[in-house]
Length: 536
Image 1 (cartoon, rainbow, N blue to C red):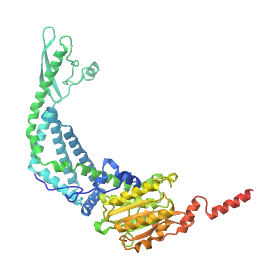
Image 2 (image 1 turned 90 degrees about the vertical axis):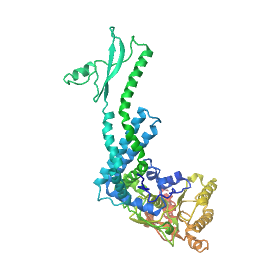
Image 3 (image 1 turned 180 degrees about the horizontal axis):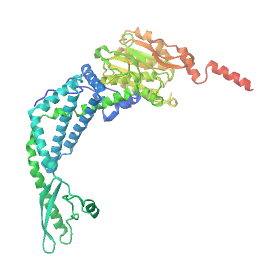
Image 4 (image 1 turned 45 degrees about the vertical axis):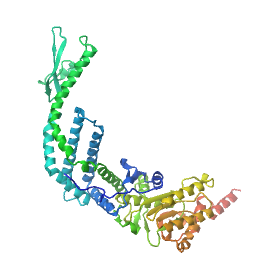
């Protein structure tokens, strides 16, 4: 039966290219996204799609999974069954030995169980499914179930399975000569029950079980009457006889196996990783739901719009860690959008003020969106990107000024060599390896290049000269993506609010905050002086 293309996670059959990174491992670490991208043995990056229709297709499927827990369990069961079929295919040897025949029979039985489980599971959910993916799956399963080929296979397998699975034991007869020496043996019968151990205790416990097959003593084909060669020959002959009996039962399977392999089962078996993808995605959603924080299905916008507008955005990895320490911990939600007046942002603010957290939140949201998963926000409109590049400071204070600038610039050159218009760039404390004047000069060049490329991005920095140069850079003719300022807020008294605002920075307040952190603010120094004078 020829079937048209069908996928649970791809809208069309066109090639899909995974999201590009300069260094995948480094980016996952910097975004703190290991909980997502290393989850449950799935290579999530390989499934990231930049096709808007495919993203919408997945969003609908995950909406069904969120609403119907039984559907998530069904996907997990189907994935396991198909993975078992794949494992059987890998261990089967070539040829038509009894062993390979048994593997083939088990494969057919697993396949029929897969279709039966889907038919029953989706039938129970009829009227509750709304996504195109699962509605199409239900239709395909029903067609398969009702097809003459499938019904004939099911009927034939049901009859023949009993012939093989019904073999539990064999009755072996051995003729003895006058000296009680075995000289001839043969299989007398094939039994549908197991024999029982013949030790004394077992016989005593089964005294009242009349009719049960119980051995008088275990049988070992050894002894003075047989040489090692003769004993081996007798073992082989018993084994050959057993093969003949099993083979006679297996011969009836030949037609069934031919019918199975003639059927076009490949599309079903190809769904194995897709069922696993959906089941694992549902588990991730369940984990996020436990935070009792907003989750939304973003409105997928065309790539050309370069849209990212999120209300109530948060970093799910940070939120989970905070809630594990304190279930009532307050999670700060922020609004973030890229638009015509700001496709690139210079983000300034105090240390530990939330700059890195909002960069990670934006990167994780973009990836989750392009996987078709809900996003950690109240609401969102997002366009897919082709690349996500991160550049976070990866050195300690002890290495500043010791040749790390050259290494950092080399990483930046690698990033810019493949940067495109539909890229998202997230930089955190880039150029911290040099002095502020040199960093400001290089930083302006980086911002100007990012703007000329037309991409989106956030540059989190302590270099306040960069924040002050926004108008100057926007006025240059090479500017395509407008640059704007974001500020990580500080409340009165230096307390961090972790709110990100779109406004001009107040450099004085941050400078004072840094001084206060080291106990070097004017008030701190005067208080220390007063204390010292009193001690004298």
